[in-house]
Structure formats: C-alpha cells, structure tokens
Amino acid sequence: MAEDYTQMWMDLGLDLKAHDALLGVLGSMYEKTFLRQSGRPEGMKYFDFVMSEVHGLRIKELMDARTDGRKVFGSFCVFVPEELVLAVHGILVGLCAGAEFAPDEAEKLLPRNTCSLIKGAFGFALAKVCPYLAASDVVVGENTCDGKKKSYEIFRDLVNDMYVIDLPQVKSDIGRELLRQEYKRFATIVEEVSGRKIEKEALKKAIEIVNAKRSAMHRLAKLRAADPAPISGLDALLANQVFFYDDPERFTKSVNEICDELEIRIEKGEGSSNKGASRILVSGCPMAVPNWKLPAIIENSGAVIVGEESCVGERGTRHLTSSEGDSVDALIENIVDRYFKIDCAVFTPNPSRLEHIQEMVREYNADGVIQYNIQFCSPYQIESNPVERDLEKDGIPVLRVDTDYSQEDTEQIRTRVEAFVERLQG
Ligand code: BJ8
Image 1 (spheres, rainbow, N blue to C red):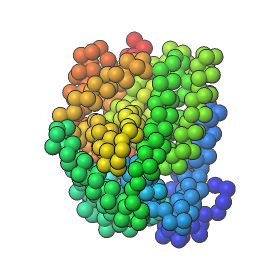
Image 2: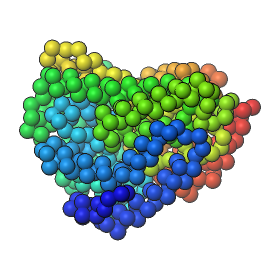
Image 3: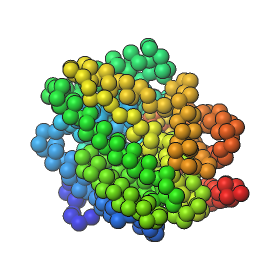
Image 4: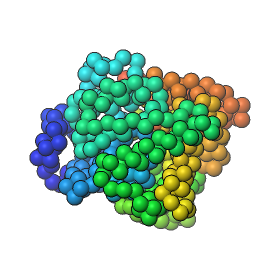
C-alpha cells in the first residue's frame, strides 16, 4: 500500500496488530495464488492494484464519501438490492467473511458446527479486522439459511446498526409478494438512513449502473467459452469477488477493458491454460475473498475453471433489471422480478438451479462439475445429491468437495481433484 492508513484504521476502531497480521497473510496468499500464474491478461493489473488497496484506498474512498454525507451499507448476500442503495446516493459493499479469523472467539457465540462463512464474519467482527464492517453505517442482513437468520440476532450487537430483510423460501405468488413487501420496506429504510427520497430518475440510473456492471460480467463469462480459455478461473473469480467492493462504474470500465484484451487473445488463440485442458465448472456456495483454496487446487492440477455457478459468480450476476417504468413503484416491481429469480439453495424446491448448471456446462463447454459445499451448509450440501445424480445421468462427471476455510484438508482435496481431472481426460 502506497499510503500510510494507520490513522484511518485507528479511527475505525480496528485492532492494528491483528489487522497487520491479516494483511500480511493476505498479501502472501495473493502473491502465491495470483501473481505466480503465467499468461495473465495485462488488465488484471487493475485487480492486483485493487487488492493491494482493498483495506486502504477503497476504505479511504468510503470514508471520504461518508464525510460528503453518503451512507455505506454492508451486506453478506446478493439478495440485498444495490439499486435501491445507489438510488439514495448510498454505497453497498460486501463484508469480510471469506477466511477463518479468531475462530475460538467466534465459537464462544456460535455452535462449532456453524458454516465457515458465518463463523468467518463473526471472527472478523470480533477481532476488529474488517474495515468494511467498521465503515458501514448499516449492516443489512437477510433471512436466508437458518445459520444466517439466527446468527444475525447476535451479530447485531457487534455492529453500528443492523437491519434484516425477510426473504421467502418458496417461489410462489405469496413468496413474490413477501419479497415485494420487504423490498418496499427496505426502500423506506434506505430513505430514512440517507435522508433522501428515492426518485424515479435516480432509481432508473441506479438500475442502469448495476445492469452495466452485471453485463460486463456476462461479457467476461461468455469469453471463457473459448479453448484455450483466455483467462484463468482464479482471475475470473477475483473479478467476481471485487464486484462486491469496488466503485460500480469504475469496475464496469475495468472489466470491459479486460474483455477487449481477451477478445484479441482469443483471435490469436492465446490463453491462460493449454488448449485442450480439462474444463471445469464450479458450482455451489459463494467464495468470498480470500477463499481461493479449491480454485487454486483445481488450476494447479492442470485444469481450467470456465465458470462459477455461485453467488460470487453467475448466480449473483445473471439477470438484469428492466429500467422501463413510469414510477418508483413500477421500478421496484422490476427489481422484485429480477431478484426473485435468484436460485439460492434456501428455496424449496429449487429446480432452476440444476437447469442453470446444465446450461452453463453446455455454454462454457465444461467437461465436468466440481460441487463446492461449505461444511455445515445444509441447503447446498443437501441439494448436492440430486444435482449430482441428475448431472451424472446426463453424462456430466461430478466431484463433490465439502470443506471449510482451514488448510488442513488441502492435500486430501488435491488428490481427489487430480484423480477427477484424470477421469475427465480419460
Ligand atoms: S443468495 S447462497 S449469498 S444466502 S454457506 S451462510 S447458505 S450455511 S451464503 Fe448465500 Fe445469499 Fe443464498 Fe447467495 Fe448459509 Fe450456506 Fe453458510 Fe451461506
């Protein structure tokens, strides 16, 4: 990091010693995982810079925005509509939950058998090492899985302010109506917090900004169908992760620049991996920064990841929101339509997720699917069985990996992944 941000971190109430330790580990993980890859697109330098400043410059931008009267909303889920936050000139950021930190402290508040993502969020908060959390005026939770729903009851004591959106569990008319009511309630909350009214033009503009960001990710996703894949799965995952932190318009521009570069690479037949390398689709739980264990193992085994069926991936970015409508209410209806399509495993039944995986396999020419489940995540672990059965029935090989954020099982997973890649090369 170019500047010294110590004072800013102190003002945010971070534990400087613990935070320094975290940055040290993050820096060396990043170097080993990303910078040592060969054949990276030049445009990834932007993401290297963003990551080097993820607790520095970006946090300073958030603090400057707060000084200018803007409000920062933190979240853990793609069901929190960024469009409504942007419409009141607010900023939505993803909160740290991708690594194990202070697990003993977290386990004083949570059962041992809680998923790593929830435990990670608690660990970061309790150890005071997440500047995004400290910089958030409000944390927006959501009633998705039981783990999140119940843990937010405790998490609210660790944050400045907390608001929870209730979510349906069934894709029915009643379910849609619940989501509509909840997004309307959320709209009034963002108005109260920001002191601004949501105006039609501002909401339209916000929808367009978020659509542009998602469209850039669609463009990137489609380019990965080429053989050789023009970008590694690790770098594409990084773009999906930065999606949650960066200024949306700057992010869109940077992703589109990478896509321009990738188009030229494809024309020249250049790629991040060898032509004919085994192509893998990763499907399952979200991978937040710095959860890179499984993708690094997959790509170090000679395969290339060509898509992520994940909330940090295509499940999160897939659909656009219509910006057609004559009133704020009409635009909120469009937002409800868009978000109601997200096929998180907390929904029952959830057939569109399987259909989406099959579609992605076809579209990105994947040879096999690796299902990624965070241990103790019942929705995705349980859904894995029928998904695996149906994919294998279609002749699509599947490997299921259930793991947590620790590194203890790395070698065991590596052995299984290597055997799977051999099966694909069959
Ligand atoms: S829309 S996937 S981001 S809830 S891993 S905490 S599900 S026990 S993160 Fe998610 Fe929203 Fe759904 Fe997406 Fe629970 Fe599972 Fe833990 Fe999870």
